[in-house]
Structures are given as C-alpha cells and as structure tokens.
Image 1: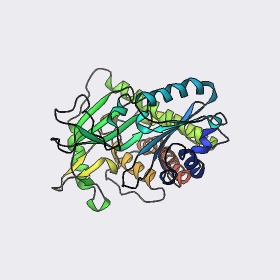
Image 2 (image 1 turned 90 degrees about the vertical axis):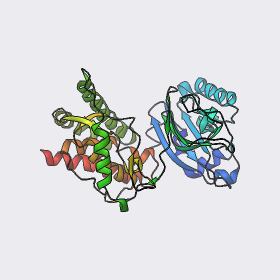
Image 3 (image 1 turned 135 degrees about the vertical axis):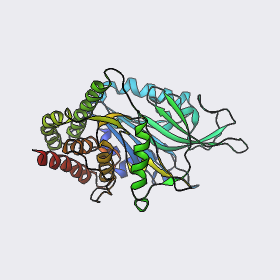
Image 4 (image 1 turned 90 degrees about the horizontal axis):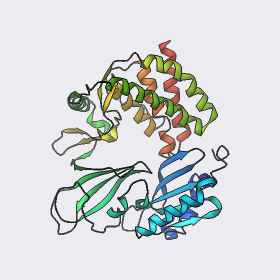
Length: 363
C-alpha cells in the first residue's frame, strides 16, 4: 500500500500503529496516545489520506484526533490553512514536516464548518446549533466521524438545562441536520429480521420521487457509484482494480434493466434501533431515493460482510438479482479498509469475490 503512494509518505505512519502513536504523543499525553485506534480512513490518491483516531481517556471519554497526510504539491498551503483553522477554534495542532502530517482534534475538520463550535468530547456546555429546538446549552458527543464528509453526534442537555437529547449530522460544506433522538438499543441478530423488513417496507413506501427525470438521474448516480467503487479498489491494489473494472460493462448492462423503487439506500444493521417498547426504527434516510428493487436486502448482507469478514450474514429475506448483489457488494468493498478492520484485505477480497460470483452466475 505504501509503495503504491510514494507521494504520501504520511500514509506509512497512518497504517502503522506504533508510528502513529508516536506521532500522536506530540499532541496528547503519551499514555493517551497509546490508546489510539483508527476509526475511519479516507484515501484520495495523489492528494491526501485522512484518519479519525479515537483515544480512550482515563474518565472513559473517547476524544478523537484528525490525522491528515498530504502530497507535496499542496502541503504548505493546505497545512497553513488547517493549522490556522485549529487556532481560530482554540484547538491545538501539531505538524510533522518530514512525513507531511497534521494532527489536530477531530473538531477542527475544515470541511465540516461549525463542528468546532460544538466542542465534541470536551464535556463543555455549548450553544445549540441552528435548527435545534429552543432550550439551554448542550453537550456534544461523537457517534461517528467520516473525515471531510460527515460527523454524526448526540447533543444532551447540559446540567441544569432542559430538553431532550438530539441527533445532529454535519455534512461537508456546512449543511447541518438536527433530528429527534430515537431512544433504544442497537439491533442484534437475536432480534431477528422480520420487524426490520416490515418497518423498512413501511417507511420506504412513503418515499416517492415522481419528478420528471428522477429515474434517469437515479440510474446515472448508480452508475457513478459503481464506477467510483471500482476506482477505489484500484487505489488499494492493481489486481483488485482490474477485477472490479472487468465487472463494470456487464454490471452496467444488467443494472440498466432493473426496475427502480424507493429504497433506504444504505441499509445496515447499525442503522436499526430497537426501542424500549420493542418497536424497530430504521435510521439515516439521507441516502434514500430510487434504486433497483431489493437493493436494501443486498446492502444489508454486504454491510455485514464488510463489518465482520468471514462471518455469515443474517439475511434480511427477499432475494435480490445477481446485478444488485454484485453492485451492493462492489460499492461496499472498500469499507473494511476505510474502517481499518484488522483483517481488511480479507474483507475486501470477500466482498469483491461475492460480486464476481454473482455476475458469473448471471451469465
């Protein structure tokens, strides 16, 4: 991996736990740096690699650090901007010139404008973001952070302040969504899939896009997605990229014939919450739209394989076509790398293999 990206010497640090923790020790206390775990990676070939690193503090909190490695051509300008952004937000930063690394609290992510004002994981009461119901100060906690793309967190009323918890999503460019918090616990296989399937069908049925041109744009978006997925695999390994590229012509041909229906678009077990009353809630409908029939069924399987390479997924039920199985597994094939799964090469291989087998069986 490192040899494939000689213009990103910082990638070697990000992928090596010992070197990464040594670099972090210049920003945080060494004992805190020793707890570092990479939660999310984003590689942009020839330009940058970003990693969100979780640390475990003595009080049980989980502060996060954004580690950015850049190519030489834009290092000086971008590094200055990011250091200045952290300074304006009152956040520390550390630059490692020889590997072109910048380390700063994850809240300094410049692509997510306004995130620093929430001071996640600091425990500090802050003003409610725009769009939130009126009330007192809140305390922000990170749920997930996809660097330069999206931050999802929970806002709890500060001590002495009234109100209910809120869910907040910060998107690249500064767009912020504030939603009601859905109480409950994560779905487990013991809960079964019947209620998930019923809830999914109920919610998807209320989402229609009958606007002129919607179907055509949905198909173009789908084609761009599978093409980008093949390119993402190529950035990791030449063989994976070549194998994915060989799937594209047949995959595009078959997908063009698939009927489109309203769908969640990114269904996975971690998007399902079981409420205190046993009711099932399907979350994160921000990628909902027109997609091939049974896309969510196949996406559910692919997400389980991405999260636990080698484990057999618990099917949602309702068979998906070969093209849909191939497409959903292809678009998730880079997730084991992005989530820094310890066995991520095996995970990529499993997902790509499922896509290949599905199209082979369709011929």
